[in-house]
Image 1 (cartoon, rainbow, N blue to C red):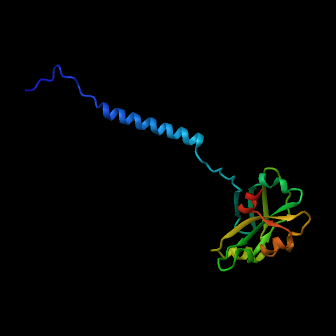
Image 2: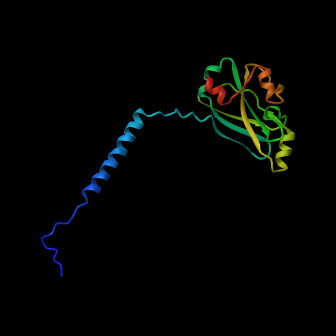
Image 3: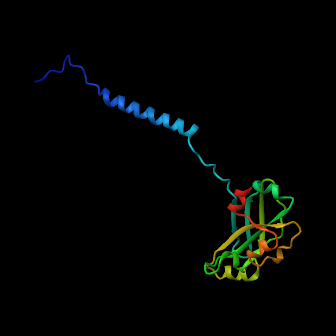
Amino acid sequence: MVSLEGSKPKVPYGRLMLFLFLTWGAVAFDYYDRHHGYHQQVPQQVFKRWGNDGKEFCYASMNTSRLVNLAEQYELALVCGIEDPTVDILKRTKISVSNLYRIPSDEIFAVVKMRQEMSEALASGRVQVWTAFILLPKGADPAVIHQLTDVESYGGKLVGQELLNSL
């Protein structure tokens, strides 16, 4: 029988030191990365919510804080359309355009009544609806917009990431 009296327990100092070294290394890297690392600025969410009631209205809510400097020249309109992957989105004619809204400093909620052909297509089922905001010059008539390619020809702009990045 072996007696354990008088023997000291062995402590794995090497493993303990390695664990502490790696832990402090991770903490130091995290500190450095938070204060000196490269971080892209996360873009503000443009659309807050969007959708349709399944019958006759499309709606969308948008953060307009980045568009405020355009408020003297432009007004906003909501456009919604029936998804059709066989036609370029800029040339789709099954769209509805809202009245013009002034550009507020924070957020806008817009609603557009769908044209009859859109409502009928939606009622038939198995179609999706897309939404977009456009800028039109103040005083423009949104009724002249029959496809998104018309927006630019009337002096307007599509509100998208490219436009927002340029502001």
